[in-house]
Image (cartoon, rainbow, N blue to C red; front, side, top):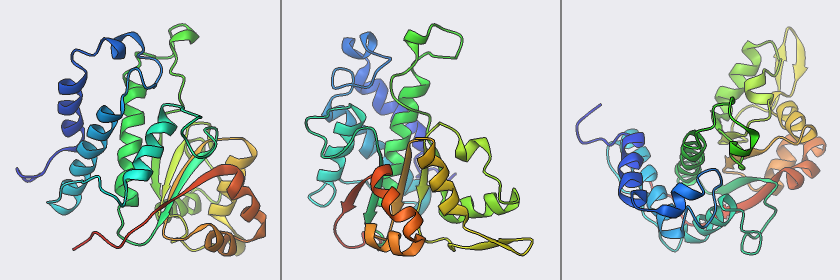
Length: 246
């Protein structure tokens, strides 16, 4: 790692230490993400810290900026993670599918959100041996897969969906729709990602995704079997604007 690059985990740890060191509400309400232990200013700092770390690790430079193009989505992510059903414009029980043009920052934003969820989950002190009351009230941890990597994994496993990707823990699928829709296993055609989405839908497992395709395009791409279920699985959000890549 080059000296000028920021380690993502390091970046957030510094911000956390600075922000919550004297936050009594955080210590009292550690097992539930709410507006008491994660205020909006704190959430924005986490998004900026993780986003900057991701950009610098990936490209060697860049500072994540909250602006008029992404502020509404970030606000909604905050209301979602804190379960504010009055302000969140969707269904808290569904996952989130963030759509937008190429290069608008969808992946960076959802990766940052994932890091925040997983950090709170790890910090809950719950290790599976303590009383159920100490278990975090939000789902986690969230694993992340590029759609193309997910396809390769399913094919490598002979078309089977292992517990990592089909289990109850949430997953984040990055660039949904960029992978080939169909594949062959020993001459038998299968629809790996469609099968995965249907499995997670049938079992009510929380799923997140980013995509360059909108809801209509994804429905046409994956077919009628999954089209109607996408609305039941996801809150669709759009990250507007042009590419930020230079």
